Image (cartoon, rainbow, N blue to C red; front, side, top):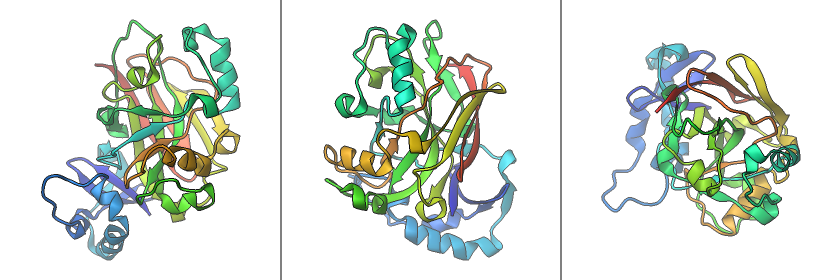
Length: 285
């Protein structure tokens, strides 16, 4: 299935260009009291929501995708984990361009490790990117995003995909400069997830997916996830050796070569095979 959040936190199932509004399926979620558990409640109980949503679809109201405002399909990730320089050609690109590395030490991902982005940076495709520090270079980075479906630590790569709820398109927006990555990549709206969550069973193998991004009609990045240095199972193994992964945690898997600036007024169209396309408007904060 393809699940989306839209408008005033409605829950939908995507079929073609239509959304079936199955918001009442959220009634199967447990009622909680403070303090809330770690993780995203919907993702933790996705199987139960999916079953109920399937029952509701027959009589669900239907709206067109083009007529709604798409939010992030994951509302409350406990962690947004990002993989730097995880494509060989992007690593070479960063090393060769001072406008990208600003004198920062750039290492292969096994040495650089992973980094975290602020949860407050998260938006959906319909909310758009609002650039800050527009006197500096702000870049797009298109990535496959992996949504964790169940709690785990020290996960072995052979079993890693069992811990995945589904996949989205991710945009890891970046201010170039000398500061640490997590600061420059965490302003509000600098993590875009969408346009919906494709469940693991529907997408299949994440290791051979074409991905691309065009900015105002010009293709800027184009690659395939087979070119990742660390693939999805290896990234889950790596991340879970440091952190307990909880339902709703997101791993954005790294961007290929071709990163370049965007400015207010640009329109970004990001695509990943078997997920779809998302259109994101760029404005000034």
